[in-house]
Image (cartoon, rainbow, N blue to C red):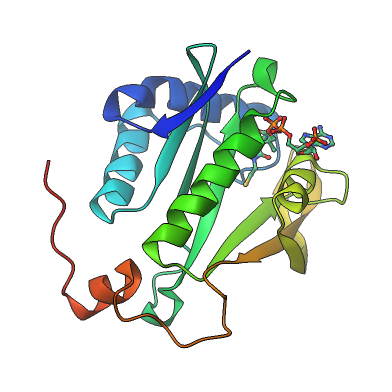
Length: 193
Ligand SMILES: CC(C)(COP(=O)(O)OP(=O)(O)OC[C@H]1O[C@@H](n2cnc3c(N)ncnc32)[C@H](O)[C@@H]1OP(=O)(O)O)[C@@H](O)C(=O)NCCC(=O)NCCS
């Protein structure tokens, strides 16, 4: 069994849309109630790519079975040094190390760009939830919970927040050469291609 994590391309979006649709319809990790169309998923991908945010896919023995991305946590600029993550693995491929491989690579890429915290906003985040377990395994710690904050599949859901400091977290001032700061200052060169 081999797991390869690589950058996502626009041509991956059909499979990504199907993986996410299954999670929206059958799970409580996402608070979306209707699966987004391929076109909508392509436009979300394009927005992240335009902002140079990492978007990865994982192949298990050559088959695309999962994806992960990091995007803005909230749009107001004081939040610019933190990113929120998303990780999804198709049902048949779960439990084989794909999720942790995606999350570790995502953290490495976000860290290389100069971000300071990665935030996981975990829908239906009970202590035994696979997502909470995955994030604990990757070194995230709990940082809060919003109780009764979602309603899906006929029940109220608690939303758990977890975070992972990167690049020293809040222990040092922002780095003026980091991607988020250069983008904020308008000195980031547009990506070619
Ligand atoms: C959460 C999710 C991405 C995990 O993906 P995965 O490929 O199954 O996870 P891995 O096999 O890499 O497991 C990594 C670690 O996570 C934990 N974990 C994952 N699934 C678990 C489960 N069902 N029960 C307990 N622990 C689990 C374990 O600690 C595991 O490490 P270990 O096997 O060495 O103990 C996957 O279950 C998923 O797509 N869930 C639906 C969507 C979701 O919740 N996404 C996260 C939203 S941010």
